[in-house]
Image (tube, rainbow over all chains, first blue to last red):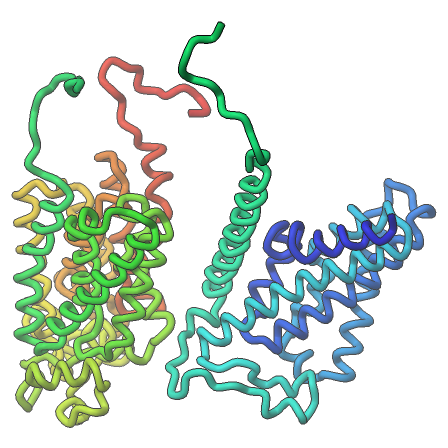
Length: 237
Length: 351
């Protein structure tokens, strides 16, 4: 029973109910900071941590807090978590902290986090709530990184630039130049590019979903082996 | 076989989409000739390459969308997009610039929105804005007109070389003074000279507006009047746009001080004014539909055009103003829906 529960949670967070491309929550960081892979990873990791911590705390206090004051309480918890993460990033990845700028504190207002706290963590026990926070953050991170990669490739013709901001000196050589002598396609790096590429990702997901649906329906409609033909000629006595 | 049950009136119409588009293409000729005469072969090369890309992109999208290819190709709408974009782009642009612009216009602005007749935004203008935002350096170079150039204009061979190898590979196009800021740009940057002094000092000004530009604009005006006589579109949108632009320019001309926005005639014959008024604003798909709506739509474009030209960040603004009003066109139509014969004029609430 418990296993199936986690499987369902994972499927929900990563695909069926993906916060970024199905619920379309947290669009502000999604659109604002996904200009490159490194920004996307930084933002995604911060969101995962905040989501996990906030879901955990909310689940722990869920029987203590009355319904009337639950939202302010959740926001305070989230704000506290965000502050911790922000300080951590300031300490360990200062340059990335500066690049992400205002969007780190703004994680507080990211509706994915309040949404999960209210919709899931406040109604479920500790472990599932923690896992839900983690996997929802994961779904968010995957979309962020995909979007960041697409925009970085289209915008600059290279990928994995500046990875050393997060992964240390060794990551300096990770940059892959796909097209040398590429003119910067500014539109992809500017906010309109984020909208356009998000649209493409959503369209892609819909195409895949439709194909899966068609396939399962086709499988269902297969006539059973040795089916009978309806008799259309001759006399029925 | 059942006969078609057609109700009256039994009239036939010789106009169809292909015919309209062919007339529009025909009407661009005087303007294009003027541009070519004054700025060299660049514009024609732009148009030729843009047309090839447009037809390829259109065929590809029609194939992917499983639509009849020859039917949609023969309506020439992709060609019109390509020609308008080719005219709007700077002469001697590199091939990839036009490729990106036309590709974006046809694939994303037209076909992803549902193809011919369903695009809310003018594809050519979307392509232009994408390029202007993405490649500001390439998009703000404009050729020097023949009048201000001491050398001969680049030959057609130079123009084709510039298209495929880039400007830097063509010796003629790397000479000093082969490109110049457009008159609109010069006037915009100026904040020390009186307009008359500026006129005398800068070689790119002509009799009424920019040298070369004024003739190109007159050419497009002639093409537009031809289209009006052919009843391809009604006069409402273009004329109201030109009038509102004239009013704005008159109000803020201030006699030609260093902060002047330029004379009304200068604005009417500069940049893409006439091309915009008769070939862009009149796009039947993306503009407002009702008569009153078209007047509002055109007038708003004229006002926005002046606002962005004089106080905005860009020297010319046809594309931005048209796209902004494309957004508003459905709203304008909603509030200007004409009364149908035999019905009350006030529509029921909530409709």
